[in-house]
Image 1 (cartoon, rainbow, N blue to C red):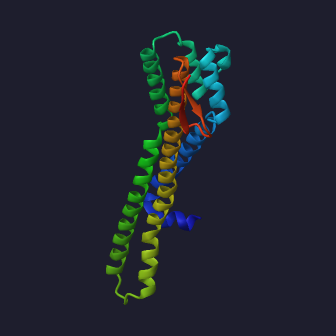
Image 2 (tube, rainbow, N blue to C red):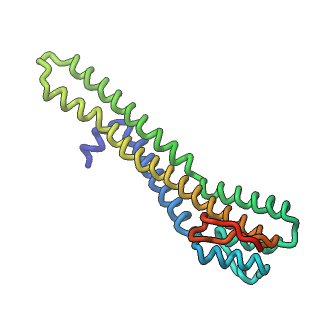
Image 3 (cartoon, helix red, strand yellow):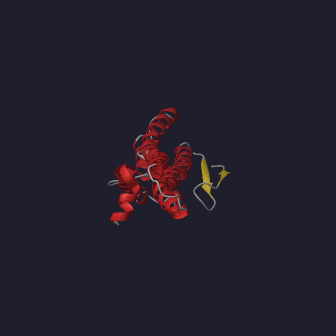
Length: 213
């Protein structure tokens, strides 16, 4: 382990900091996304039914995720449709910001880590050529291979940090977008149910068809 650490040279500490920060961000975001309320077809039907009859008891208690948006809609069901849409739009914006929080930082680490690794490689190669220039003995392939191995070591570690960070950042962004699309579609159906027009679920939270009241 000490040999690996010494091979990374002065860029070892920045790369270690990037790896720890990326791991902490991935675990924190994972805990947030795993607590999201699932959007099942049965739950969607129950939500639309609650809006059809204005059953405020449906969301009593401490609601989270899309259930909080439903509770907000039922609480202000007496407002005009335009005001309800503005209210839900503000809540969806806050929810989007909550889910996308820290993702840009995670993607920044994914872009910064390979740059730090490349910088370490360049510094290592400069040191290698400086040592070769100071030798009077012939330069052997083994000497070059040993120097290049150490120089390329930081690039490998930079890529090992960057790939999971970028994959997690993009994956969480797609997860958030998919979830918010489902929430928005469900709340739109609930809005219509309050006004007497419904969109009936046909198998998934995003699959809908028009049904006259």
